Length: 121
Image (cartoon, rainbow, N blue to C red; front, side):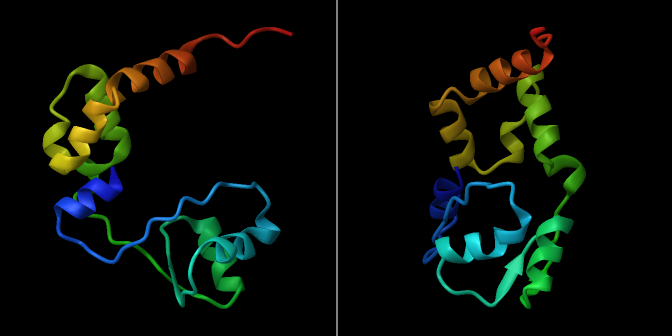
């Protein structure tokens, strides 16, 4: 979705690198650094990565939120699940990828799994 939206917006020379979580804060910074090209600034709005990267000596900047009350992922996913007008809140390329991958059905399955009672051992 991100690649399609960036391409559609004419943004070039961007490399997206998936970084799997390893749930080990002590080595998180070195884990990230091992997967991406060298960088001087880390961008996040999350307090834990902020602290970890600041402690490692990196400059850390927040990402400005734009119309967060409307453009928050939780809001968009809720609209998708309830049949609301979500497509107008995402780039057209993102909406196409979601539709092409059956994203709404995938989201419904995940929502149903979250509501299912946990099996008793």
